[in-house]
Image (cartoon, rainbow, N blue to C red; front, side, top):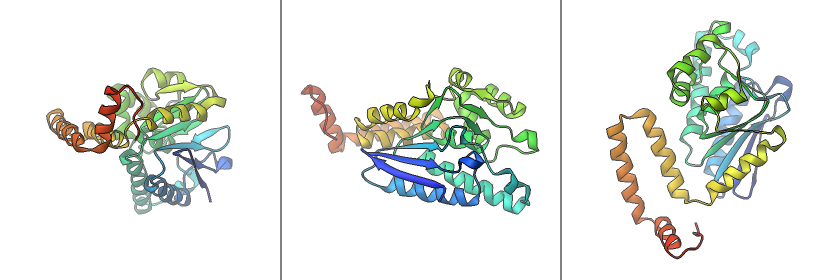
Length: 254
C-alpha cells in the first residue's frame, strides 16, 4: 500500500508513501490514490483534506519514467485519462483539499498540486513541468490548469523551457499560496484547515463549485450561476445560523 490515510479533528490526511522512488506515480499508486480520495471526500466527519508526500526529498516527482518508457500510445492514453480522473476528483471535491508540498513537485506532481484548492510549499519545494525534455507534453492537466493559475505567459515559460521554479518564485507568480519552513509545513496546513472548518460547510462547498465555474464558463454565465447559488443559500439552516450568530455577536454553530 503506497497511499496512507488518517483522520484527526475533521481533517483528512492523505500521504503518498513511496519515498524510495520520490513518490513517483505508477498505475498502482494512481489506483490507490483515486480510491483513497473517494473515501476521504465521502467521509461525513471530514471537512478538509491535506495531501503530502513521504520523505524529505519529494512531494510527488511526477510519473514513473521507467513505466512510461514501456508504453505505447494506447497505454499512454489510458494513463493520461487516469491522471485526469484523479485531478478532476481533487478539483471538484466539495471539501477543500490542501497540497502540502515539500521537495520535488515535477510533472504530475505539479499537476496534482494545481488541482488542489490551496497550495502551501516548504522553502525547499521545487516545481517543474519538464515533459518537453523527454519529448512529451504535460499529460495530467498542466496545459489547462497552469495558465488559469499563473497566466498564459508564465505557464508558457514553465512548459516550453521545462525549467525549475523555486518555492520563492512559485509564491511570486501565484503558483502557491504560502511558503513556510519545512518543519512547519503540515502544522501550517492545519492552521489553514482550521480556519476553513470554522466556516459554513454548505457555503464552502458552493464557493468551490463557483470558483471552478469561473474557469469553464463566460463571466456573464458565471454571474448568473453565482446569483442563483447565493439566493438558494438563504433557505438553508446554516445561513440562518450564520446571520443570527453575526447579529448576536457569537460564534456560529455549524
